[in-house]
Length: 418
Image 1: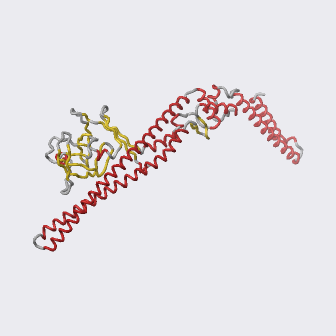
Image 2: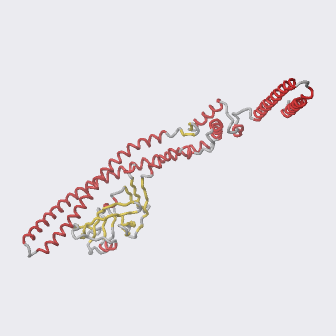
Image 3: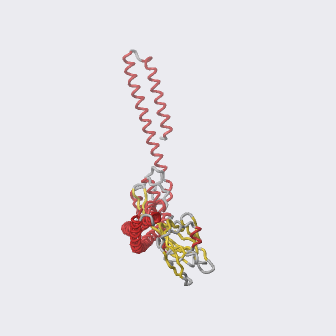
């Protein structure tokens, strides 16, 4: 019987029962009989209504099942399933097999790639490389700190020497005892300065070797990270192609229906956690390709910031120090201390030019900055000399001068943050 017809029949019976209840007092001869029949009538009404609701609910459920597809493994039916529809275990097993062939697996409500093991192992082994890099970096920092301390002590002794000389000038010819005492102090101070300069040269050589070792370690570390990123891109592309396959899309829809995974999965979303691990490491690597200016004489120039001022210098990896003509040094605001060590530099044309050695607080090219950098200030007689960016700066970084591309490629790893 149709649900609508059954409902009409039930309604009719309910009305008859209610009419019978209302007319009962007129047909009964006593109050007792009336109460007895009223109780029977109420129970009858309740039973009829409950039966009606049960039958209606069963019929509706049957109609709902009749609307669902009979074959849940059919592709077109899978796309039409509602979020509450469930596929049979056989269909789920088939979907899992398809996903496995595509390099995917379901874990809870998310999908993961089964092909990330190689990259994960490389990232894990990188932890050991990071520890080794930190140790090499620590050795260099200690050596550089030693050089810096010696430099500061030399500056202090130089100021002290100047003060003793001022005092000597005031007592000369007036107080012989004070004169002799100050001469002794000056000689002792200068002897200390000489010993410290010798120690400084040794410390600088040691720091240079440590820096060279650090450059190699940073380069190896960066090479490994670049290789990991390359493998990640290959995996992402392969996964992107797999997700475009029709059978894989159908398998994902089956999982969405049974396990509420959703079906809007992309390669980037699946590999997001792995990508985040790589990015976290890449953030500690600073690499820059700095354009160089090509001159008619074949030299390559780059803008160098010294302190807060900029000068155009020739990139020269054959020069031991930054070399600045007297005029360039003046333009940069560099002052030469009275006790600055004297040097003799051989220029490219074979001339030997006197110079004074100074220490520059900060030197920067692009985003690469070095502190306490040695430089030579040429004598004013070095007419026509060009400012040179030498190894006292370049040696602080892994660098490559690419003449055909007219670029200076520089690399630095923030080992202390790994």
